[in-house]
Amino acid sequence: MRQPVTRRLQAAVATLALAAAAGGIVLTAPEASAAAGSATGYATQNGGTTGGAGGQTVRATTGTAIHAALCGRAAAGTPIVIEVEGTINHGNTSKVSGGSCNTADGVIELKQISNVTIVGVGGGAVFDQIGIHIRESSNVIIQNVTVRNVKKSGSPTSNGGDAIGMESGVRNVWVDHTTLEASGGESEGYDGLFDMKADTRYVTLSYSILRNSGRGGLVGSSESDVSNGFVTYHHNLYENIDSRAPLLRGGIGHMFNNHYVRINSSGINSRAGARAKVENNYFEDSKDVLGTFYTDAAGYWQTAGNTLDNVTWSSPGEDNNPAGPDMKSTTTVSIPYAYTADAAGCVPDVVSRTAGAGKGLKVSDGNCATQPPTEPTPGPTDPTPGPTDPTPPGGTNLSIGAGSDGSSKASGTSFGHLRDGDLNTYWSPAGSTGHASIKWDSATAVSSVVIREAAGSAGSIGAWRLLDADAGTVLASGDGAGTISFPRTTLRKITFEIVSSNGTPKIAEYETYAG
Image 1 (cartoon, helix red, strand yellow):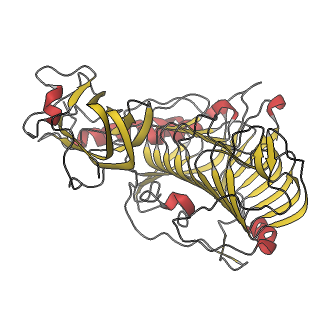
Image 2: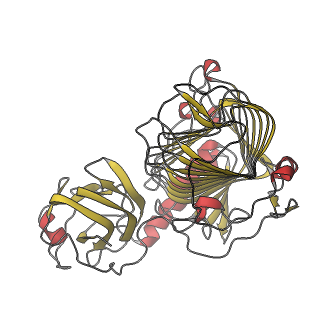
Image 3: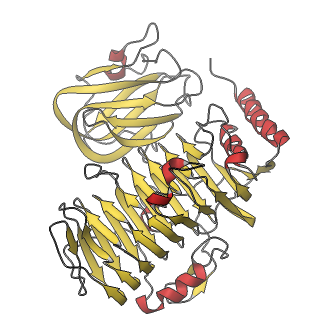
């Protein structure tokens, strides 16, 4: 049975109270608090990125307290702003359990959640040898924190060696004014500073420092992992990085107004069909700052307004295609958002005054000067790609006449009720989670889904994922029932997976549309 609101709120407060008693968390009243400034770049697309704006603000001084704040919410999508101060490490980061979280020891785990801001305050926030892992989540902001010396081998280890890592259907993440650093490369136990894989999209890294690492970061974990993309990197400092600044496998990356210093082996590595727009950056004392490297799977780039200051280039070879000193464009890339780029010549100065944690969150004014962050325009708190509007898209409901199946169903319900056009019938999973699919005999193009809950069960569905069952890829993820829009995809079977719920989910209709 679904818990009354009062009981759920009591449970949330109790979880937070336990953490407070253990130390490391301070409760504050709900308020319209959020990260300073507004998201930029690709994080503004797909509905935008607002993090925990409008939710409760909680102060945390330990990793366990961060987890407790996530677990103490009413649901996995309840907005929250977590202000962090002090040093977060293995000794103070433990797993916390709850219906609105999925945490683990030894890592800051943002898994199967949405609408969360983590922001460093006061004397600063340092994540020492402990990484931030974002998985199956959306609408996340990380701002004004330092993450350092996260290892994948040796001791202690965390997050596969990534300072910040994202994977599995992640959408809309803004990482801003952070300092991400290591003390060596793979042989010293470190991996990437800023990695994305397994269908991660609509991400911006801005005003950050990435330094002293063998690997800056990647988009796509292999030549076949090309469903990632739409990533913006601007006003960042890459310093003393061996390679991957970043490595792009498929997708689109936009790099502007970054300062690259001592890129030792290769810089922006566009491969496996990726397209990079590279403009108004300053490359200094570096080697092979742009090209396709260590593979014969070509990537492409469009360049404009960059400055090369003591940059050397290797000769082209079978597995290396450096852009060369003229950095001639090999494609065109259309950028869907508005932005103003500083002239490349002033980038070193602007970046030195703005990038990294503890810089007062200053930003460029687009004219080679700095200013305080622009405050965000009030907007929706859940910009995930899905449920936004119970009104169905135009066209025919493709589920009528299709097939359906799924995980174990509750007694008295039927998969056929998902596609019978009758809101008085419904399907329920046998437990609080489960999945249901619509399927066709031949490949069918779909671009939106409408999930309608049965009467009396509105709000039962919590976090969810929508899957292309043929390819096993995540089309969208979010929280709550409604309309889900995604890039038009041709498939034979589409699966709606309920990851968490508030009681017993009841789906009256699972509608599909071509758009």
